[in-house]
Image (cartoon, rainbow, N blue to C red; front, side, top):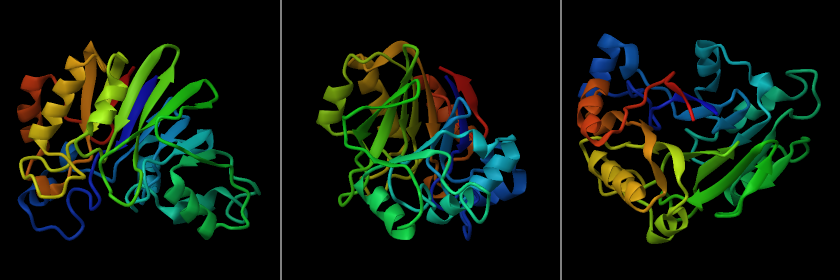
Length: 268
């Protein structure tokens, strides 16, 4: 599988839309890998993970053809991951197609929001349940529980194809024991994991700082969830975490974790 991180920023991006913080100032001055759009990924140009408000700019920047997507998997309903208005542009009258070309997969709340917004529109919509795998074309996708919101069953995804496995884990929070138990011994080949809060941990349990990110990764390595040489790449970085890209690289490298950035791609 070929993985492209289309966006690696938190809800307000970097530089944050109205941010006067140090990281936003650095990003405005230097650009490059410090510029982060809202988090999203693409697998093999066909499986889209989340559809946020920066989708159009990401598609333009990376030369992506959205008509190649066969499915969009939503992790949860937060607006930086689910931009409802973007879905309509795949159907008449914006294009000639009267039916959305791709299938949408999401949790109960995601499906409810889409049905409410588009009650009469022909959309293939499949509701996901934690730990219940679905098959889409040649991909097996298993949703697992993220510790992100108390009022919504948010998901991370194990994506399997041809014996290779990716765990896409954005907006994770620190996993509960049931998740570590479920993942134990699965020998996942690559992990994309959130590191939203950088050096500045907040009381909110729905995101991780660098220390928690490292702890989670080490626990997954120890229980056999990851193969010994699994590639680990971060995403979903917030300006409030007070970590520039270079600072993230320096902090994560001793733990064999790579700091992701918009446009980062790798093979699984």
